[in-house]
Image (cartoon, rainbow, N blue to C red):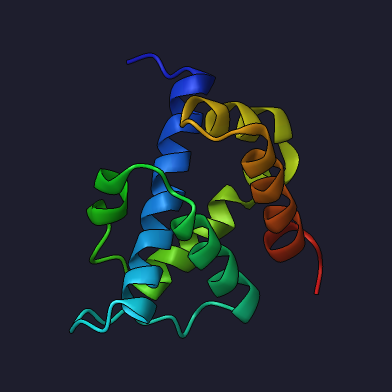
Length: 119
């Protein structure tokens, strides 16, 4: 199987959205769904909720209902180098997902502020 950078970026974006969906559903839905966010910092939680709120694909939002806080934390730790270091790939994946220029810039700024910058 051959992995392309584009394919990896798309899969990473989907995973991030799924993480966001899980936390947002837990915090806003009022349903019985409970997600353990004890491993996440306030900034990580805020970023995941922002990312979920701006997701354009409802199927992606629904796909990650059972992700644990440990899974979210692990995924963010793995993706931080791509999110914080490969801006061109991040912006390209957002563009392919239907984000407009202003939305892409806002997403990039939130990522830098909440995920990339030191406390």
